[in-house]
Image 1 (tube, rainbow, N blue to C red):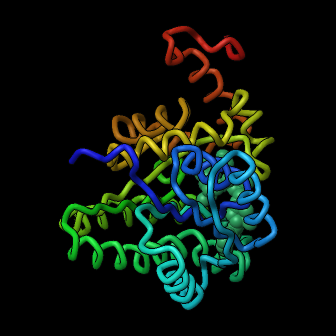
Image 2 (cartoon, protein in one colour):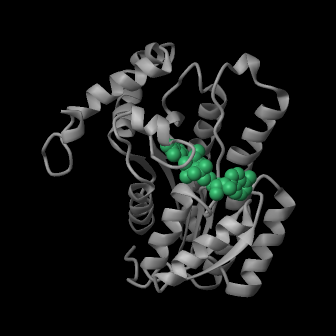
Length: 286
Ligand SMILES: NC(=O)c1ccc[n+]([C@@H]2O[C@H](COP(=O)([O-])OP(=O)(O)OC[C@H]3O[C@@H](n4cnc5c(N)ncnc54)[C@H](O)[C@@H]3O)[C@@H](O)[C@H]2O)c1
């Protein structure tokens, strides 16, 4: 299906107050869309809207805890009444959790599942249903749901059991939902970055070989939406893990038991020798 140049017109980004969410809101606004910036941290979402407007774009800030099902319902109704049906929803808000799974508290485990899995699911249900209803009335309309998963969705690791489990669930939610919603003109993409230098992951990304900025993920999200891509690994390390997980899962299982620092060093070495987009080796790793 051909996508009009001025589509999408209205985009919702969760976790838009920082990192990948902020960069994604900026990229959609720069492409001409009005962006609804939702975040647990309202002042952070408002700052993102200030940036969008300073750059000539348009956006609106809303407070939302994605883990709260009834808050999603109210938020969805407000956005519908104030702006209309969102063409695109980017379920980006997420939290990390590292360390021994056996040492996690019940609350830690509950929260990461609530935010990363249930949060993305609530968003898909509420906004996906609005898109379906609109598209039934207007078969030329289309919608798109983006779930920001992670390379951890297909890279088991002993220090990331809880996080990886939530991201694997998000990936499978996306792949299964896509099969349901295609009948209503709604695409679904799972975006799977690795080592992106955002506030919370700057150190890890740096250790992994420089790390890409959140702008790269934003760019890939826009492309995934326009081209209706199902699964989008972002950055060399994510592609490397994605291919290995499918071709040689036993190697991923072995890597899962290795200490994090050693895995990062290995990935850095291997991805550093993969050619960049221009065909040359990346200078920081050569
Ligand atoms: N940075 C990476 O290396 C990386 C890699 C793979 C996947 N991801 C995923 O990308 C997404 C964004 O990560 P980031 O690095 O930009 O994070 P970040 O911590 O820089 O920003 C997250 C934003 O989400 C908001 N947020 C947190 N919990 C929320 C909730 N319950 N409801 C609404 N908003 C909430 C925070 O206030 C913050 O503004 C996450 O889902 C993360 O798991 C990140």
